[in-house]
Length: 270
Image 1: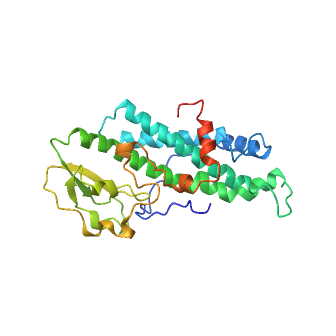
Image 2: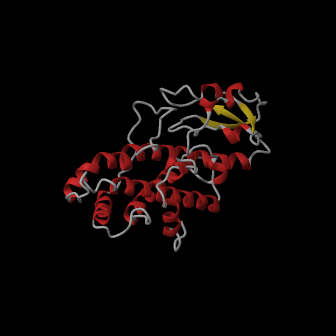
């Protein structure tokens, strides 16, 4: 899947436990059969079995993340997160279904036997519903918690007006955020619109509300290498998006993806 890999810049601990996520194999098999039998058009439609399972997993990640925060988020804000998760899930499914559909024919243009096609796309699916989904799930958990925390920060900003960038809790943290550790700035400082914990995949830094005096923004905060990863360049505590529209599933989507997603939700409320 060109351009959609998710680099672990703030890398996870080597001994991290596997997230309790399992993509339902029955749903996957139904989807494969659906695609192979051409019951729908992968370019202009969204396969519902794949969507329902993907959306379920991101909803569980959101539940897990919010539950680890001490904040109580408004119902309307949770609805915004769910809506964003639904749209992101649809774009992820559109990428997945088209990636595997392109492998249905051999070099002569002949349709492969179903069993051969399933074997050929297995490594690709292993990434889509395995490795990549694991990274996306873990990051969604982190960013859902941070979104809830941000709601609390805003609620108590009159008492604790500043935020401090806390060091990563990872046993083997990446180096890309180390210059930001200890930064203290007002919650409304422009720095937080550009840099935040969670703007790298699996980042385990965090923010803490404080009344300690500001330190000023880090001098390297505008360096190209310090910019957020695509898809993580927004503040989920403000817009309710765990993944932004710059994520490759959306920004580098197949042709007709946006129309397919729009059509899918035409009679739904994501």
